[in-house]
Length: 458
Ligand SMILES: Cc1ncc(COP(=O)(O)O)c(C=O)c1O
Image (tube, rainbow, N blue to C red; front, side):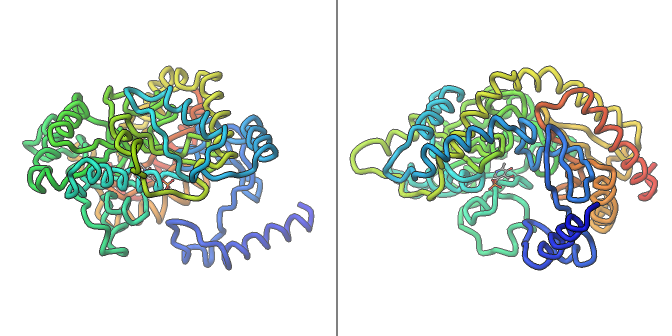
């Protein structure tokens, strides 16, 4: 390695440790350890500054659905920056935002035709919650302000979105939160309490609405497949029932699809897979193939209608939302999703991905395999027959003390997570196929086998 390269690397490490504040990161852990610096990506792989190659089994946080290193998307952004670098969507419009809004509307189900851009997912959720409140005020229900979400669900970090997020350790440091966040059980059917049937899970939402007082509840927010806790899929008929309950009480149904749209579970929007039509969809991440940051709140004509007449205004916005460069990249990304048949590819291959993960069940530490599309998790257990999980100290030792480092060393980026019970999450780029699943297995199997031995499982 040339001296100048080595100096540049040393400098990056030093500067990162001194100045960069990484998100959701125990910064102290890097006092004596190397900061992982990713410098390049191509297809399903990324490389760090030492030249080590990793399989990106998490699509860079569920974002790079079309794979890394997309010259076509980069070109679309560069061309747009030359033509019109920036104009905001505050009182003005520009061609790419208009075209993208129309394109998105053509892909959504039902009458979800009105698109309000944001710069990311948390802003989309925040916008949905604010829209729900103002909608009810405009339609004569000023006390409808509360939001019902599910336990362990992640809906982002802005203060409003955080009140919907159902992960206690993420909430406590910032209390008091925006009032109105209420939580119901999620659809973790692997750990359903004795005597509770999967079909009763939706009824918990109805009971909570009645408990709070229907005249105080503005919205229900749910992901089609809940990420945090480990890709909880809905039981049959769950969302149909949630839709009925929302209609019964004039509560808006928000489908938080920051992850579950753009092919992640084999459809443009996750709600299409489970055959429901929400009032609002929140999306981000894969919308631009992650080549530019962008999110969106998509509203039904019914919900948008009161804002489209007279002096009514949705009093809300973000300077960079709908940025022309991001919009141009998103149009190119949607074109790529269509041209490359990405949704079909996910539908055709998801069984193979799932079979590969289920083949790991010969390891006693692998308890459950669940998910949909290219959005899967394996739950790690102490005893598979008893479904016994690890206590907090053991989970810490298993995840932070072993899996994070060993998976990284094996060259696989995925997420070992214990926001619920310990899981390993896998969400490869949607361009991945069976040969890539083999590569994932080759890296994952030995690490899980060793984890089981270290934790004395089986
Ligand atoms: C379901 C869901 N909602 C909201 C968010 C927040 O999105 P962002 O990190 O872009 O603000 C995320 C992020 O992962 C998410 O998964």
